[in-house]
Image (cartoon, rainbow, N blue to C red; front, side, top):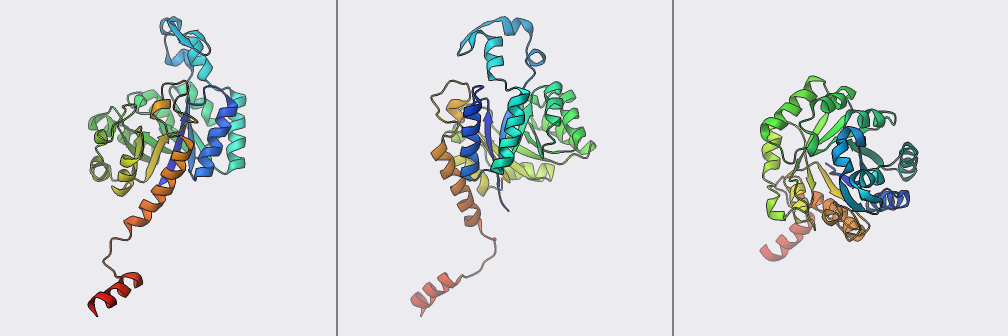
Length: 274
């Protein structure tokens, strides 16, 4: 089975459509299957008091200016939709509020994505589940009971989904990956389990494929030194090419699980056993 590779652009575009397109190109050329963004309705996600707080950024001196600087417009998303079709790569976005999810509905996407931070947002989860669109559900920072509730909700609305094991530290240390949870979650939920990783490098990512992960999500960036909270836990272009290549190699290395002797091994047998 082919592992679906999701390139999380997220907010690493810094509100710049030139960077958006560069990152789409990088993902498509590396062989990724989906690029992912994040969509927020600023005044629904954050309080007025929070948005008024000071924060230095390339866009100004308040939280509002920083948040608004990272948001893409309807025109931007229309261009993303067109450009991804041109590049033959799917796109999706994790919404952080119901209005943002309704915004995304106009594009009739093949997939939805639930961010780990949204697992307790029943109103948003219900809006997504009612669409009955295949949904990737990240589970960082969540207990089994919280994941159980989401799974029950999506099954109630007969919405197809895939759970993604995740550790929400940025960047994640490989020893925190807990990859043995992947087969345990497969047993518990009787569904495919993916892996959303925030590591630097890809030891845990390849390990997840070996443990049976059916999808992989990684943040991508042009350069980890760029402005942004997610940049340091992101994969740079050359690393992404190597990662996808090694995921495909790991898929082949897993084999069939059957005990067989290949022609190459039989030739060695004849030489060594006579």
